[in-house]
Picture: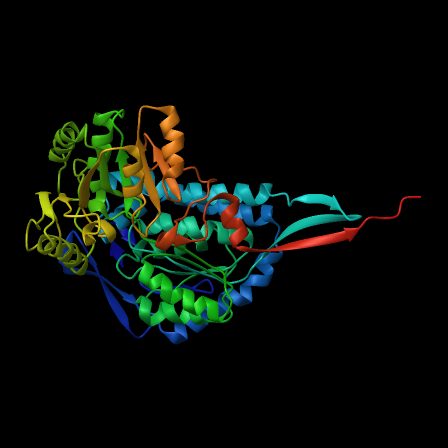
Length: 482
């Protein structure tokens, strides 16, 4: 089927072939929700079994290849992604309505970077070696086995490649289950894997509703690793199934990031960064949604913040002038609205926004809420929409306390003009990643993940390769010296 100028298969990809299902599920574009964009084959227990069997059959041969041999496949795939950036960006923009400018210039190219980075890291790996007790100790990485990768609907292509690349580089075979709200770019990825010449079964794609097919994949005892990005609630269910089969499980979950602005900060820069959290309608797990500002500069901060927000343009995701896009789904729009309804009932103050813009579209105004207390739901629970909260503090101890007061711990952002405070307060903020005087800067070799209910395990660099491997100690007695 042709979608956004690209021919896309609507079927699963298993064992190097396209496989259809008798049942389908509908995919809609947030840009024209009233139209059916595609009807995708929907997976079930039979499809799940077929995919896991395919990955299991292909595992031994793929694992037996050396890291450099596997890397050659990953480099070819990265080159093909580079070639297809324009097509993938158009399809993903249509499918989930992230800004086309962002997809084309940054997000989709990151997919190629992911494969190259892990090809390089796996090839360069040298296991730790040391002498002790008259023996030589060698640490080896062994491929773990078939791996289930479950990805979310926001930035689906990039996040899929972020998980798939280390699994393949480590020698595992993969079954990808993309989110049902935005599955199209994963089908393109399957075509590129096929063109790159990967052996059949090394990479598979199973489409469908999470509760109907995802649960079969995570329950299968042949699966030896599970990597998930999504909600905390779903992670708890997957974790139970993983534990039953004693399968290592990594989860990158929700966030409720704090943006802390100290008195000595560059207020204009901090306010512009805060206003930028509305990009893509706030559907970003790393977004700094809790603005925590020194009361000594709060009025100046709000003035600058409003000026920046006033410059946002809500519109078509294909228009480069657009900065705020539609929400992904009517159900998600209703979820965002319900948070604001409850906030008003709780006595929270809406400083700006707080309503949908058109009953026929999925736009929600950039919204800023002043909570009645730090215990307000709007402060303590992830909204995953264009909703920020605003709180002030009197001293830095209070700032840290507010920033660390939720169950989440994915990311935090700090603005300060002091190098000393950057290190002291940055270290005190409880989050897997803390940015100081910047936002969303990523080094692919650094560990990435959350604390608390924001995640389990770490992705990035050798941390991801270690997760996708079974680490082995080979201990060899030294020969007697004459």
